[in-house]
Image (cartoon, rainbow, N blue to C red; front, side, top):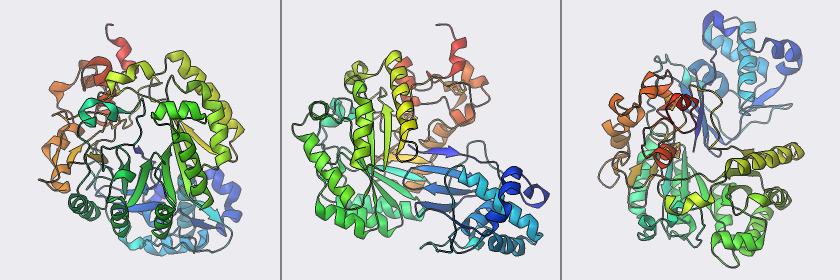
Length: 485
Ligand code: SF4
Ligand code: SF4
């Protein structure tokens, strides 16, 4: 799932002298000689009303105004802050001091999101954006912006899996019976259309994606289109040849599900004897090869008491980043899921444990934690669901949807990519009506809510599971408290 952050932008003209005065005054001399550099994980994409910075590994994106993108495109490790200021000064015909200030402001703003770091020496990045591409007059943003295409796509390339994880919605009968793989010709057609729409990230998942016979060809194809393949695997079938292949394609990040440090719990959770030893061995082997391993642990009643040791174990294994996520109920898997969901007390204990461990490892190990069931502290104008806003899910048979949690439900079934193009689906009335939900489907509180156009009633999946209605106000929304129980 991606998330969107909209930083307040630097505008042309006088408004360029804004923000981070303190930072600028404190660090001015030191900062001017530094070489700002961005990560190879990032890509820029021009939209009508903004430029997107896309983190292809973490699946995040940010909107910035074009003039900030021009500055950002010069953060390639080859120029000092002073030099970038000079270039900006000549591009926009503004005084040099003002341009340098704008560069410093942009660094401050973007470093808050870890999008830029400072080098002492000029070591250029391998990639380079032409700043001229981002000199354009942007249109006024819509309240629910329509990007020219999805920012990211999730390909469920197979329904097959060699594990039987208790919490997985794929265990629901409507999926298990299918056991199909995406045809490579269909995959290629979609990937070409995604490239033309400048999609920058494709999650390859399933089922277990390594069971798909064309997996390697799919990865290779995506790389040739500059679409980052984010591989989400259970790690059981990883081989030496596969890791070598990924390396040769420049892929150094892989996502592995890893729910317990305890062999007995792990094998029970996955329904496969010997799974723990095999996955542990493969994690060690990938680590030794230099792969950045991102693990995700889904926490249920079955493993919630082991989280502290699980974190220590992942750190010792050399995991790059650990994501801890309490299991959420889904429409698709609800026949089995409800008994596994943590209750309020268990979620409080989990949060305490993770907070303590995050503090313990703060200088050496990244641990992310978010409680998807936590009550929203206040109503905020954010986009809670990115389905149809920036992402699409594509099932093995070519069906496009906004969310894998929701089964073949007419409201969200966007059509089949065997019959329609990606662009046709993205620009269809159906997707528009999911972006801007028709008034008659909304509850009275959402109709009156000032955040309706960005929130869109929150998570459709959760609302359906809890209240039986996809468009009911999100169960976490505080405005719900005003409703009769
Ligand atoms: S769920 Fe409805 S009431 Fe709550 S923030 Fe979203 S649109 Fe507003
Ligand atoms: S409906 Fe909910 S689970 Fe599905 S993509 Fe949207 S926020 Fe995520």
